Image 1 (cartoon, helix red, strand yellow):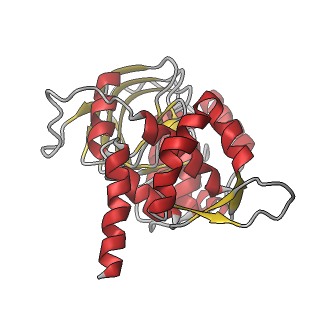
Image 2: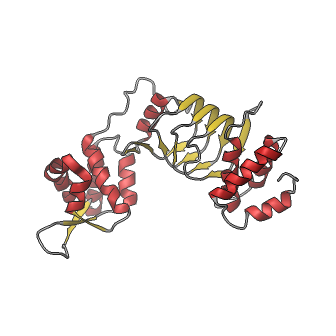
Image 3: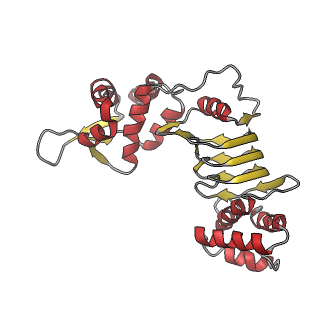
Length: 288
């Protein structure tokens, strides 16, 4: 890259995914030896601009570019387009004067980050984790999809609640269809939080014993088993399965695909009753 050998750089970046250590080393050496970091960024931008949605080059360019942008103070706005960024790409970063366009961000935290004069245009962001201290100054989101945000153990999927919560954190939304003025800050439904906490356990397990539920729920276990679990079973969201061991312990499996759980969460407006209603409506349609 220092010698401007574009063909050689492309050949290397298309072989396989670079490791984090390699990316850190390359970025560090470029910052030490290159007279023009913006030229290196433009080189990476040129390599990935015409790449398809699934591209190792896009991912490698994103891996390197986010490190080059970290702490770099450009005189003019830098346009970053069609890149794919790794998990936690924005965690502990100082990014200034950058427009991200038509780019893909894997789930990323913002803790210890400082974003200034940044714009996200037509981007897809898997998830923003908005715990801890971070600084936003003139950070705008336009025509982008943020699939969820994470606050502690609470994950929010509803688009309106996502916009309101992020606006309260300092993001600016300019989408014409997102009028967030006058909306109340997001107030999570405790029953939906407990439900999501349990259902997320099935991402890594097919069947789960009730003792695992009790450990996961802590002091809320009685309320869950008395008031929430019967509804989840009646609507088919969860199902009982025979327990292979001794004793009277119950065992459960997910009764619906996780994709339907995510869709229901996204349409629930943060309410347990609307989450359940989604499945009741689906069941009625199947009966017809």
